[in-house]
Length: 169
Image 1 (cartoon, helix red, strand yellow):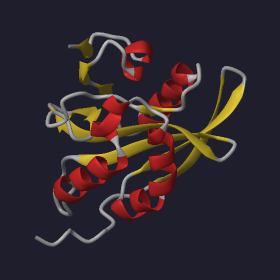
Image 2 (cartoon, helix red, strand yellow):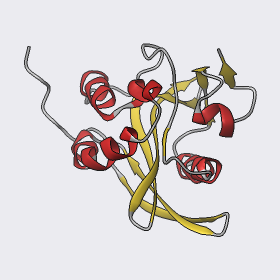
Image 3 (cartoon, helix red, strand yellow):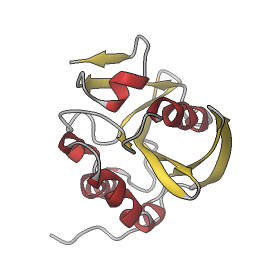
Image 4 (tube, one colour):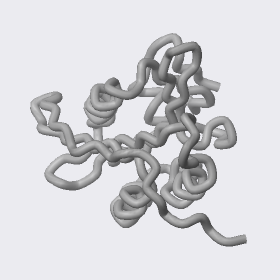
C-alpha cells in the first residue's frame, strides 16, 4: 500500500511569542502535513531525550496517524501541533487533533484513543509547566477544551495539566 502524499490540509500558524516565567517562548501551531514533515529532525531529537513511553506521540506515529486521518474536505479532525521553542530550539511538542462536539472545539492528543497513553514531548528540564502554558495559550484560538485521557502518573501532562478533563489512568 502506498504512503499518502504529504499534502497541505490546514494552515500552519506563524509563531506567537509569550513571556512566561521570565523567559521568551515562541509557539508555532502546525496544521498541515508539509510543515509537519519539515520539523522531523527537531522532533526526533527532542523525543530521543524523552522517556520511552512517548512512542505514541513520537514523530513517526504522529505522521502516520495524520497521513491517514487528516483528510481534505472533512471537517474533523483538524491537526494542531503546538511546538514551543526557546532560542529557536523546540522544547515542547503537543500533538493535538481538534474535533467539534456540540459546538465546542475539543482538543485531544493526536492518535487518541488508539494511542494507549497520551503525553507531550518535552525537554528534560524543569520548565514543562511553562511550555504547556504557552502551548495552551496558543491553542486557545482553535481549541475551547483540552481533554487528556489515559495519562500515566509519571507523564509530563499529568504534572502540568490540571482540571476536570485531565483523567489519569
